[in-house]
Image 1 (cartoon, rainbow, N blue to C red):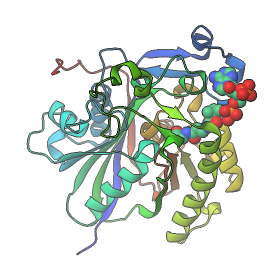
Image 2 (cartoon, rainbow, N blue to C red; image 1 turned 45 degrees about the vertical axis):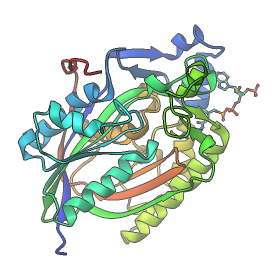
Image 3 (cartoon, helix red, strand yellow; image 1 turned 30 degrees about the horizontal axis):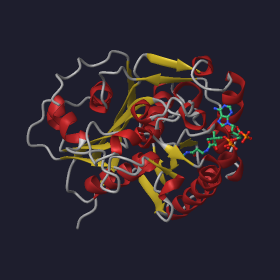
Image 4 (tube, rainbow, N blue to C red; image 1 turned 90 degrees about the horizontal axis):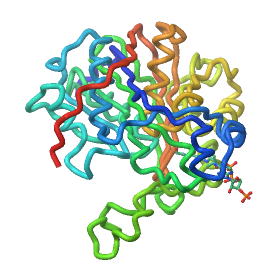
Length: 348
Ligand code: UT7
């Protein structure tokens, strides 16, 4: 098959205006602002309204990315949503979002690899463009983690927030996808999972309603922490090797924002100056698959990321899963949306 180049033509971001600050958690669970800042680097998270689902907050980010790319929804050949918090187990949130963008007949699908969703989605969407299947693809990392967070569990509730990052990928003469490395180890799902709602523990099963705590994220934080650093470093080195590059060639690392200590340890292991790492965890907490494209949008919008630079996207999360993509930046714009979309009429 003939090969084509791919570039990111525009980036968008949207975070809902509702805020949960560290001090707010002092009223909910036995914690302190000091503990949260010292152990995670987080200060605030944006939280969707009760009536908002993932597609509702994805819409403004999608429109922002399209505007930044100078495109209309009709220019899209495909819509991909990376999410661990879909509107429903099915249909795919991408189908709902495509419809909200006014598209009928356009292919749309979700990618579900928890916090690694954006790097997996980017690899898949870039492959669709590079192989010539599609010319223009909208890819989002979109999450409403507040909907599956147990606000009585101090070991997880302080960590998660809601938000969306979006990129428009398009065919290009220059190929900006320089290399990737993806991996999983599904031998212990209990390291990080949502126990109820799938076919193992269906939420409709008799007696399951009483076990409603299973409808929330469960995580063995310490073991996930250690593997996160190891695998993000290993994936980054492998992806750079595939690109024929070394850590010294990296202009910006954009890691998944799970914990400032994980980011610091990753940056240190790669021997990168911390100024070459994009960090916004203090404002958003952990937004799973949305964290990397949200950070990208901010670093492009404020001018840190410039034409020709080498960027590494690196992620780790439930699966367990991990991955890194090496990308050459090619002069795209970013737009941060501030207005929420009108919420769709509830369909169920
Ligand atoms: O995005 C997907 C990937 N996710 C991650 O990469 C997350 C990885 N894990 C982490 O970021 C960290 O492990 C956490 C932030 C979740 C926890 O930090 P930690 O430094 O690993 O704390 P710990 O689990 O070792 O707990 C230390 C203590 C415990 O108390 P005891 O047993 O020593 O008395 C916890 O109960 O801190 C306690 N603790 C808290 N104390 C105050 C746990 N959460 C809190 C809290 N406030 N919110």
